[in-house]
Amino acid sequence: MQSESRFTPRYQREPARRVFAAELREAHYHFKDGEDEKSPTYVLLPTGERCNRVLIIGSMTQKEKRGDQNIFYQIRVSDPTGTFFVSASSFQQEAMTQVSKIDPPAFVAVVGKPSVYEAPDGRVFVSVRAESVTVVDKEMRNCWVLDAAERTLKRLETFGTTEDSKLAGEHYATNLDVYRRMAYEALAQITI
Image (tube, rainbow, N blue to C red; front, top):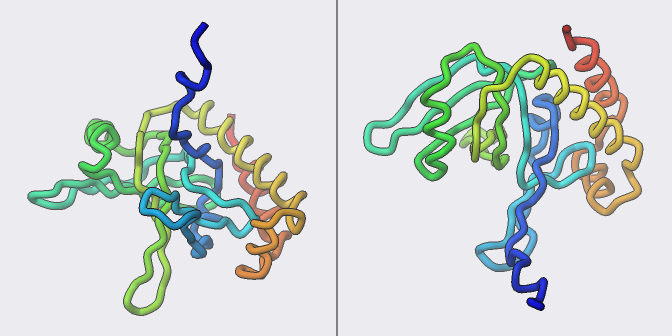
């Protein structure tokens, strides 16, 4: 009988967190978990959860192809709370190919890594580097809104009881009512 450890992957992917655009847009605290270059980089959400990957679903409202030598796409994906800024480049060839074949408007599911950028004037921007982009239907988008709202509300229930949520409370001075209202308003926008 062969050992199970032989079949256990040495690298385990981080789960893709469901997060609304309005919250991700406010997430500017980021950190590496470890000292070596392969250590994962996380963005700390204001509701108290670290995320290395996100799953977002919304309407792709804009697509722009950029670059001559190093071609990449910038897209905008809107959920009921705001807009995600997403890029797809040759570093993730699959995502770039997928985006090239989609014409807005279309509902899309994006799995990607959030990145925080600081402009020279001090403004902070959060974007998502796409790993995959898939066309979905309205029903799937509605299911994602339900799931994202449920996960947001669960983070709010446990806020202040975990190390990450305590750090978020210190760093963001999180107003839980703002995020609770955001989740309920997103749910109210679901259409059948």
